[in-house]
Image (cartoon, rainbow, N blue to C red; front, side):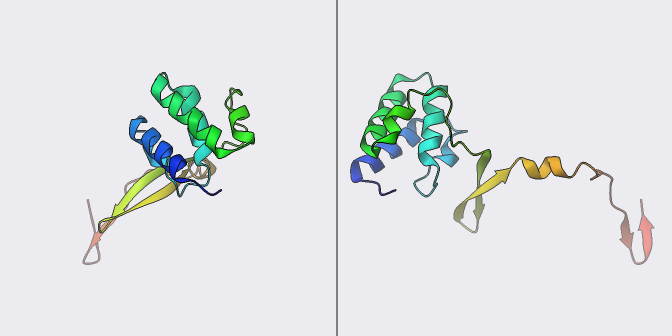
Length: 121
Protein backbone atom coordinates (compact mmCIF):
# COMPACT_ATOMS: atom_id res chain seq x y z
CA UNK A 1 0.00 0.00 0.00
CA UNK A 2 1.24 3.48 -0.86
CA UNK A 3 0.94 6.06 1.87
CA UNK A 4 0.25 9.71 1.18
CA UNK A 5 1.85 12.53 3.18
CA UNK A 6 -1.37 13.01 5.15
CA UNK A 7 -1.54 9.29 6.05
CA UNK A 8 2.09 9.31 7.16
CA UNK A 9 1.43 12.30 9.39
CA UNK A 10 -1.67 10.68 10.90
CA UNK A 11 0.09 7.37 11.55
CA UNK A 12 3.04 9.19 13.12
CA UNK A 13 0.68 11.13 15.39
CA UNK A 14 -1.15 7.90 16.34
CA UNK A 15 2.19 6.28 17.19
CA UNK A 16 3.19 9.28 19.29
CA UNK A 17 -0.06 9.10 21.29
CA UNK A 18 -0.15 5.29 21.57
CA UNK A 19 0.75 3.48 24.81
CA UNK A 20 4.39 2.41 25.08
CA UNK A 21 3.61 -1.31 24.68
CA UNK A 22 1.97 -0.67 21.29
CA UNK A 23 4.59 1.70 19.85
CA UNK A 24 7.05 -0.93 18.51
CA UNK A 25 4.42 -2.46 16.23
CA UNK A 26 3.24 0.88 14.81
CA UNK A 27 5.89 1.48 12.16
CA UNK A 28 5.47 2.40 8.51
CA UNK A 29 7.70 -0.56 7.61
CA UNK A 30 5.25 -2.95 9.30
CA UNK A 31 3.07 -4.58 6.61
CA UNK A 32 0.24 -5.08 9.14
CA UNK A 33 0.21 -1.49 10.39
CA UNK A 34 -3.46 -0.90 9.60
CA UNK A 35 -4.40 -4.08 11.48
CA UNK A 36 -2.35 -2.87 14.44
CA UNK A 37 -4.13 0.49 14.31
CA UNK A 38 -7.47 -1.33 14.13
CA UNK A 39 -6.64 -3.22 17.32
CA UNK A 40 -5.46 -0.02 18.98
CA UNK A 41 -8.69 1.73 17.94
CA UNK A 42 -10.84 -0.85 19.73
CA UNK A 43 -8.58 -1.19 22.80
CA UNK A 44 -8.09 2.53 23.40
CA UNK A 45 -10.26 4.81 25.50
CA UNK A 46 -8.64 7.99 24.12
CA UNK A 47 -10.98 9.80 21.74
CA UNK A 48 -8.13 11.69 20.06
CA UNK A 49 -6.40 8.45 19.01
CA UNK A 50 -9.71 7.09 17.75
CA UNK A 51 -10.29 10.22 15.65
CA UNK A 52 -6.76 10.07 14.20
CA UNK A 53 -7.09 6.39 13.31
CA UNK A 54 -10.53 6.93 11.80
CA UNK A 55 -9.20 9.73 9.60
CA UNK A 56 -6.24 7.57 8.52
CA UNK A 57 -8.61 4.73 7.59
CA UNK A 58 -10.74 7.12 5.55
CA UNK A 59 -7.63 8.14 3.61
CA UNK A 60 -6.52 4.49 3.21
CA UNK A 61 -9.35 3.57 0.91
CA UNK A 62 -12.36 1.37 0.38
CA UNK A 63 -12.16 -1.69 2.68
CA UNK A 64 -10.66 0.04 5.73
CA UNK A 65 -13.43 2.41 6.94
CA UNK A 66 -15.88 -0.51 7.07
CA UNK A 67 -13.41 -2.56 9.12
CA UNK A 68 -13.60 -0.02 11.94
CA UNK A 69 -17.20 -1.09 12.48
CA UNK A 70 -16.07 -4.68 13.13
CA UNK A 71 -15.09 -5.50 16.68
CA UNK A 72 -12.30 -7.97 15.96
CA UNK A 73 -9.67 -7.53 13.24
CA UNK A 74 -10.00 -10.27 10.65
CA UNK A 75 -6.39 -10.53 9.48
CA UNK A 76 -4.62 -9.95 12.78
CA UNK A 77 -1.45 -12.06 13.04
CA UNK A 78 -0.34 -13.49 16.38
CA UNK A 79 3.07 -11.86 16.10
CA UNK A 80 4.39 -9.38 18.62
CA UNK A 81 7.30 -7.06 17.98
CA UNK A 82 10.18 -5.94 20.14
CA UNK A 83 12.89 -3.40 19.48
CA UNK A 84 16.50 -4.51 19.56
CA UNK A 85 19.34 -2.01 19.64
CA UNK A 86 22.72 -3.18 18.35
CA UNK A 87 25.58 -0.74 17.88
CA UNK A 88 23.28 2.24 17.70
CA UNK A 89 20.88 0.75 15.15
CA UNK A 90 17.34 -0.04 16.20
CA UNK A 91 15.66 -3.08 14.66
CA UNK A 92 12.08 -4.28 14.88
CA UNK A 93 12.21 -8.01 15.67
CA UNK A 94 9.28 -10.41 15.59
CA UNK A 95 8.58 -12.37 18.76
CA UNK A 96 6.67 -15.54 18.02
CA UNK A 97 4.75 -17.06 20.91
CA UNK A 98 4.60 -20.50 19.23
CA UNK A 99 8.36 -21.11 19.56
CA UNK A 100 8.31 -21.17 23.35
CA UNK A 101 5.33 -23.55 23.47
CA UNK A 102 6.75 -26.07 20.96
CA UNK A 103 9.68 -27.15 23.15
CA UNK A 104 8.34 -28.26 26.56
CA UNK A 105 11.26 -30.72 27.10
CA UNK A 106 13.79 -27.96 27.63
CA UNK A 107 14.94 -28.03 31.23
CA UNK A 108 16.30 -25.08 33.12
CA UNK A 109 19.18 -26.92 34.75
CA UNK A 110 22.42 -25.19 35.53
CA UNK A 111 25.18 -26.24 33.12
CA UNK A 112 28.39 -27.78 34.45
CA UNK A 113 31.29 -25.42 34.78
CA UNK A 114 34.65 -26.91 33.88
CA UNK A 115 37.97 -25.27 34.66
CA UNK A 116 41.21 -26.93 33.51
CA UNK A 117 39.50 -30.26 33.08
CA UNK A 118 37.87 -30.27 36.53
CA UNK A 119 34.17 -29.74 37.32
CA UNK A 120 33.74 -26.65 39.45
CA UNK A 121 30.80 -26.32 41.82
